[in-house]
Figure (cartoon, rainbow, N blue to C red):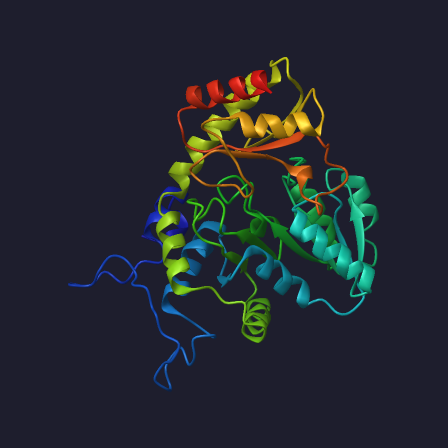
Length: 355
């Protein structure tokens, strides 16, 4: 049966497995090798690893990519993507997004490494107006932590009309909600740390593409910068990926239910939820100190950064100096996990009332 005919749940479980042969284990082993015998497919531990390859194959299947590269972190993957651009290249990117990406782009812009045109990614006409003369469009949708949603197909199509490269951070939506490569994006990035691995125990990133030449350039960047993944982390992430669709479906259903309840809570002034995904951001009636008290007052939900694990976490995002100034001081980003939704709501309601 062709993998093209398989559903995501099946792909997550079946992709990247060893060949079906008598006596062969069904799980890929952890390859703890830095050195390989000459004249084989892998010549050194910085250029390849069997455990990486299995996880890369599985992510490629989910994103409908021809190839995926694993990196030591999401930021390593993002940096590799931008490293391919010429010095001073005009780049269009959202003014709000993952703080690590925003910090990198602002530094590159200040140094003259890139000419970054920051836009409201949810304002399609503004994005299109800034594409003239650009060489690269970086899309994050939904945005982190404001959860703004871009007209993805429209802006990618406009970029491709102008022969502009497109990179896409698909961490929040995941390939279960959108597959940017099918819209014409050139590169799709994941913080594998988050939903794909899903257990808050690894730090990894990935880049997927349909273009063999682009894949080769990104692979050269990974080899040159040495931003490679550890075999054990890769194996853990692959094991986590097997249950990704199940975990994400539960977390997404929980998030939708909690967003609805938050909208009617007297301590909440605004709820941001795009109708899909497992992140809910909301603004409370109090100030930054009150938001911190909310996050510290829960007994079940943890006050912690990062997201996408089976456990529910939240935090006041502006506690981080690198966070965008457009994010309200009293905004709380809630990463919804797989617990019972009634237990989660009781914890949220108690924390809001107590704080």
